[in-house]
Image (tube, rainbow, N blue to C red; front, side, top):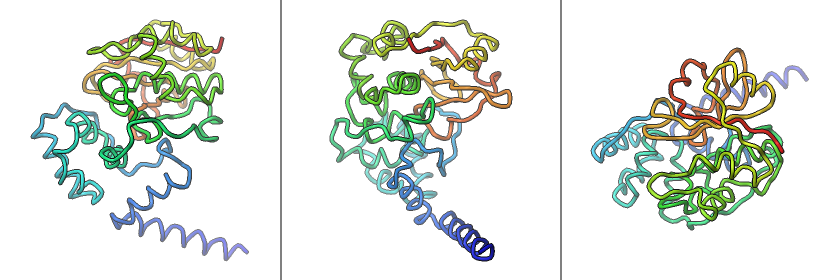
Length: 283
């Protein structure tokens, strides 16, 4: 029995190495993870996550060319780059893990479809991605949730994690934000949604001071924190992320725009990038 188990383990290791070394199989392997239910929010990602940079049209073309040479799945997007919104391509260049979402953009229906998974409903504060195909193509403001829906997606994570409300998807929160006037054209999602708006979903949002002690205290008490971010490791303009807990003296971050950036961060690294923040609790 032990010999069979060891042989099976070695077989799996060899199989993984083959998938990893062959680009076409590598992409198929990760696509399979999505298809069997791990979903876009699983921690598996093969792309590097460097700090985002502002790119003009020439910078986008250069970066897409580099990616297409490294990863075959980028080839069709590079060849048809004139068909995609520049804002979407810029996001892809900074977050290559969006590739499947971008490849589906031209033919996708511009609406939400799909529910939260059992895994997402059972893992505390779940990692939800704004460009998940279940809701990323749906309109939000002058764009869509995939590009502009970081705030509703963060609030969705917190609502689902604190209340178990399976209907509070990023799409439903984005829809609520637009209907109730929390989306401001030219600006984005109003900060007031974190307090006034949150109350409509059975949670309390409280603006808190930027203090390591306060942040750690809230997280240790089971109160997730949403942060509005300045340019830095997560964004070139503005963004929202969720702080979900602590581990080994570091802060656990759920970035609605990236699996790869959703990890443990040193507080000192993110402190200077935080513009404002709110702690949440269930009513």
